[in-house]
Length: 131
Length: 247
Image (cartoon, rainbow over all chains, first blue to last red; front, side):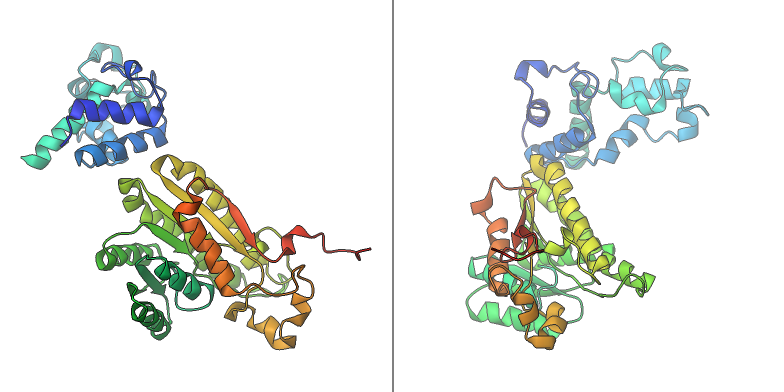
């Protein structure tokens, strides 16, 4: 299996037609690199081809939410709860729960997802598959 | 190869096989005819398998693709050809008749395309050829349901081309005019098709092989930079104004 870091980086570079140095680990895929839903799909299929790790687009949301129910994850206005913010910090350690709870809309969480977060996700799936 | 047991579909299956493709000949009701196509191909040294299934139902379309992969080892080309017609004046048309035609013609195209996407996207390679019709671009009294289904296929072809290009999947369509198939048997019965053929600039119907060869061109490497194309094979029908007399 290809090295996950380089496989993810290569997938992002090729799918978004970016230069190598633009794709840093801390860059957010959607906000900073400009990925749209079809780009994410393309990135995931490229990663599958190079690493053998299959991730469906719908898995991204499930991974970020970590099995927490919608009612717990966000309030009735679809704003992230404290529980939700703690979960986001687990899968996106660069985030500060205090900045998110009560402020971030649930449908905006993907905007925080970085290249490094994707590397971690692919690595965890690869470990799960081999373990 | 959906609807591969007869007509244009059968010819495409045979030409594809002659070009070296292993062909899954899909049929809905014509099992014996599909087996005959398979036999013709295998006797000529090719590989083929008959795969039953009603592609107007998504679950069956998925099963057809899965069985194709299981029997032939993969899928690289999809030809969406299965089609029906139920001509009637709109005033007289049973509402169920437009839906039947739409479900098979456009629904089958949508279903099989979606069902094939997994393998195509994983291998980052695939060619889809949709068998449409000049009716999808022009009007014809009594064919509103058929023409609308083909117009939908044309629009779908363009959208698929744009959406799938980055995955290495090409999507094009063939738009036949008139070819001697069961679908135009009514026209042929009247006067041997003369009433129609004299209005075609080339003064004749297309042969099914002429349509098939265009489909195979779009499926193969010679059209490697083509996607979203709608190629008419109509002897000039759609190029003419159709009113008035020449000088």
